[in-house]
Amino acid sequence: MKKPSLPICLARLLLTSALSVLAFAPSLYAQERDLARVSPEEVGMSADGINDLAHAMRQEVDEGNLAGVVSALMRNGKLVHLDAHGYQSIEAQEAISEDTIFRIFSMTKPVTSVAMMMLLEEGRFSLDDPVSRYIPELANLEVAIEDGPGGFPVTEPANHEMTIRELMSHTGGLTYGLFSRSQVDSQYVAANILDTEGTLQDMIDKLSRIPLRQQPGTLWHYSVSVDVQARLVEVLSGMPFDEFLHARIFEPLGMTDTGFYVPEEKRERFATMYMSGENGLIAPNDGFGGDYRASVKLFSGGGGLVSTITDYMRFTQMLANGGELDDVRLLNESSVEAMRSNQLPEGMEEIPGYPGNQFGLNFAIVADPARNDGMSEGSYWWWGIGGTWFWIDPVEDLVFIGMIQNRNLGYARQLQGISKRMVYGAITEPATDSAP
Image 1 (cartoon, rainbow, N blue to C red):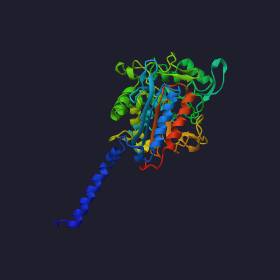
Image 2 (cartoon, rainbow, N blue to C red):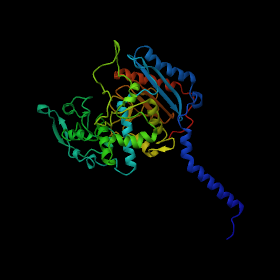
Image 3 (cartoon, rainbow, N blue to C red):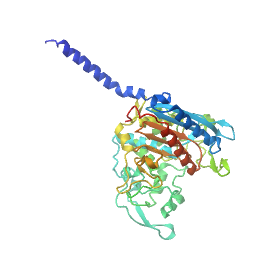
Image 4 (tube, rainbow, N blue to C red):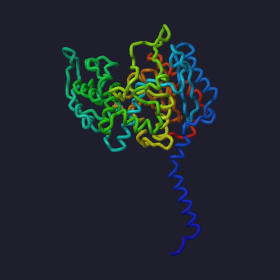
């Protein structure tokens, strides 16, 4: 056989080298976005602006609005700001730190979404499958149409079975029993839907006996939908929800302090919950959110986790990277794209209570930056009832996380606005990397 000429051999060598580079490109890209600490100028931000951000967060503590706050900002996959100020316990004078453990409540929902999308990628379900295909107890649910006698609403049949897409976008007809008033909500309260002494299956059994609040697919209504998703994860994977999260998400990402309870050896890092008001800060002794001393029976996919800011940094940066962090890929980029794509019913332009926001698969999505303190269109985000919040901005390639323990919801939203204005005010240059 005639030997290839030198130019052909050289071409093959170059092609082989190029393919090798391409084969390693994802890992190289991940290493470039590895949360290493950099100066603000290296990622197109102002050092003065970042100092102003830290000062603004600290000022809220110094003025007595907060016991303590931890905040973090990443841009282009690099850490540009991580600051802790104040106390995790005023009474014990324990300083807050980047290792402080917080109740993240509804910031559990994005974690559940990732679990669901991992199972979707494995072909375990399709988004438009009826939920009842996998949880038959939720088949043939009635729908409330008006108040009825004895606290039981007049009902009609659902016009279709609630789908998983509707479940993941809070449009399936479920409610929480807390944020609206209807006879259906009253039944949720009476049934103690999210009884921490029960299991996810117990919750499903209760839901099967209560009508939907509205027809599936007609409107967005905040609900126990993500807790139902947690049960779906169990059914689809054959694993308890807490074990799935630990094995498939927390352990691969190195989220060592995230879980459904705080073990004794970590109790000294657990933040106290406070309430701010006209008389300053108090620590209500009413058991709000539970003490997380022991593993629970109800692994709430909608609000059960505790975490640290460093753990949640790894989770959110994985999403900002398109599903990968430190050579660990949990999701394909297409799955992350689906999660941050609008899923609202036709004719519904925004979600109630959040002007200029649409909704994806367990995430709010910014549609109007002017009504969201400058967050770019397409930014996706959520927050927790204990005060924690985050957002991921694909346009500016940044992630921000704030963690407090303050159950004053109005104040928490004000603080979110302050953080957004300070972050965007610190940007001096466009993002150098295009986020996936």
